[in-house]
Length: 513
Image (cartoon, rainbow, N blue to C red; front, side, top):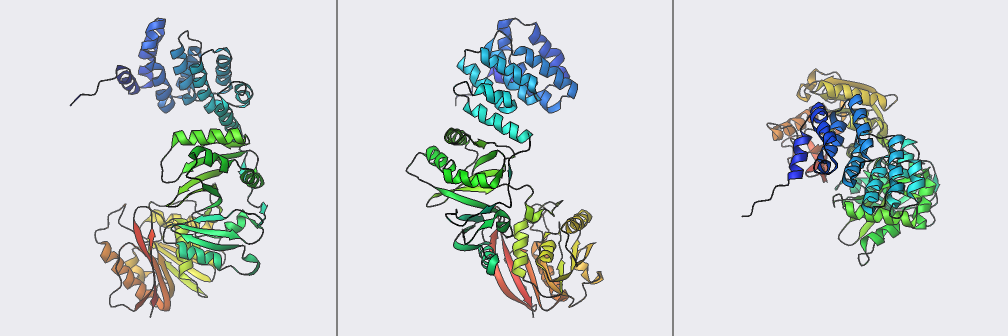
């Protein structure tokens, strides 16, 4: 078997990469500065190492010292040294002075390769001056686009207009995506609206997807009044598999109809990122598509960091969906979630479970494993709840549940959260036999934290629910195992497998007899 040849330059860089800032500066940078022009080219890995090491562990003084050194290298006689310096500068953090240096070098450069690397450096730190100057150079359209994104990000401009009204005439279909298995609950949530509140109609359901048709004028706030979906996107179209993929996608994204929608819903510059669901990063294709979009419609700015819009590419067996998805941070539906515990519930799953539970008047709700309190909060927000009780063995979870519940601003609901094992429920006020109308929970799944006897834990949950529930009360929970209560007065009323991202649970509802 042939042995892989060693790369001396790479090994040199890896050795330098392990040095401290002081070691790198006092020994390697000093040696580089003493070397002649030709020798510096062979030592150029030092420049790369300075950019990485100082960015990760340098003090403000050390970073400033390195930054000034790199700026001087921009005038080095050797092009390779200059290229390494312009690549390292943005890693440490550059300002208008460094942008000015790079633009001066761009104006003087006659090398296409150097101009390309200058453009890539300016993509990261460029601002208004870059937009003005780089636009005069062929091949630097991406640099202009990224500099525009930098400006918008710095100014915190380009946000989503949540209350802008959209007409149902010629409106886009809307794709609500959810956990696989929650489609029926989500569809019923949409269909359950009546009268003037009914602004959408489900027209198709697929795995993890409910497709809506708008029935009247609506706002994004109307769409986000539904709580059981994970993401909502406007269907811009389907990509033609017979056409070049980059051409087909860019044509849909930059279409006048799509741009008009974005104009209506965006305050300020329109920034988006492109994401290929289930296909990895696809960096080359992303670059080609976003460059084509910018060429077709310069007002659409690709910004991979903190863009308010995302273009999601979702392939399925028949076609490829191109969806425009608002990226709302935080999600206004779940802004009460100030803190979380490890392995906490997915908020739309908690909302779906609360919806599945239904509600009675004067409801008393208990979550035996309250975690961060999402199920209890979602039940309270639905209405009809007098009291919620949360128990958890983690004191941190109890504190977080209390903070989240307070943040939800639920009025008229008495809340008590107790650090306790659920099996000790008889000692907790409000959990007397027959006192609870709903037990709802997303219990430990045994995935992140091993449970010695998970089957036994679920059986004990069935017993506890039977003891505290009044006749007609409900038990709704995400069951990690396909087990049912044996010999207990619980009637199985609903069952659905739900994908939790790599494993399935059984969302179930039982009625206390």
